[in-house]
Image (cartoon, rainbow, N blue to C red; front, side, top):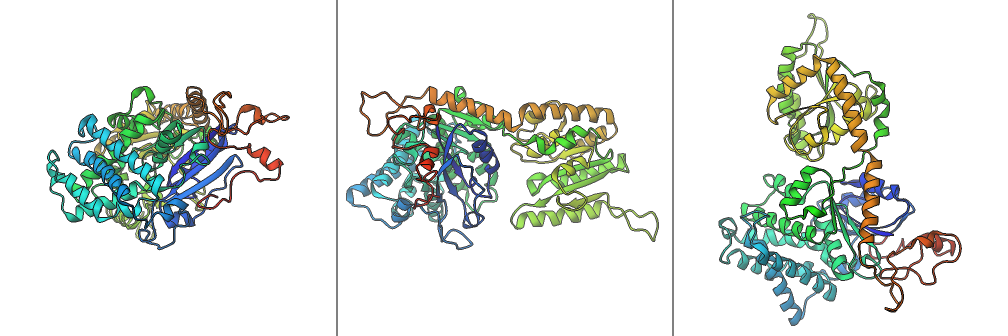
Length: 588
């Protein structure tokens, strides 16, 4: 079958989220063909290029979620799709202006109706109906008349937002919004709805796929909603993080006032509810994400937890070695940023040193991108120097530092697996965490772990490691000392951790799960007729039917659930090329 893979700020770009997971999925399911529909987040991301795509990727369509004026590097958005580009300055006629006003009024009215009451109780069914009415009405207007960019950024939209915020029934926070708040929310609303203006919604693009698979929620799932509405294409949504949760976590640092944050939170909640309502199947990456999805209205019958697959072979040598690592060494590996709470780890290690004077702490990582990560690393180094001055045996010897900050790739630790092998206990000290990748890698390496109880940590670790409350250096220190003093327990926990990781978190189990979900979804979806065939002809449920891959006579009619199309190998044999790459308007 032909899968439309929808991504946001990741695959096929060389930088971004979920790129490795998407690449493994595409390469690991050779029986299917994939069309990629990718949204980029910045000019810098586009300049980094793409990963090398396998032959089974047919068409790549790209579009930016940024414009020239928004990107600080000032590069021109090379992925701008045709209809989005031509619609940036389009003006509507009187009838279309009325349509636009009615749809925006419905959408922002639903967003404002319960912006102070959270995603689960935001105005009831009536507000949800208004939101979907406005959302799909704007999508149809964009299809009929061109892009919505200029209209959504106009004074008309700002005035509609003002009216909705001042309407009876809005909460105190939203009611206190001022003109700068209206303008800020209008700009964010336009950015979030930018996928509505793309030229992907025709029978040769999203209408030609058998299944849309959104690799994340939010903007990536929006084209999937329209593909289902316009063409009846079933939608599968995979989330390793929920956009609403990400908004709440970023809110204190975001340059928005309280009214704008409340409006954006309710918008993300409304959008998530609609995505979950329309999706045929939702696959959260862990139970922590699943709970957030249920809070946003996801039906439990649609939810199937599928853990992200990771390459166990990369850590096989260390895991099978069974040496236990440095018996007196704690290891921390990750991206250095405030959410990882290295400050608490350093204070905890001071307690560990009082109990075990020979203990060492090796911190492997680089600062997170941006000035905040660099500043946090400087602060951590200064605290470590204050808590652990160099220890010298005499006045003429160089002091040994019990805490080291290192980066992977040097002569001592050339690879990531060797960093895990350097310690007997791997520590995670975060106060905020989604799916803890470093813990899974440590488990593949057969290492005992001490972790804080955040995100999906307990779900991942199970009973194979020690878990303590976050922001509690004393509890973190006690757990580390317990394992440092008990090598037999470390060995048992490490062996159990490796067995658990090999059972639950490998690439193979991830591929098996999605292989079954794909077939199950299409098997239960109504068959659609190929373009150009009559209603009396039998339906063709797949864009590329199984018999097309058998050598010999091809099916009499090219197969498509929306457009005529030959399989890629047949096109190559005829000298027509191996796919639809190279087309203009954002195709690759």
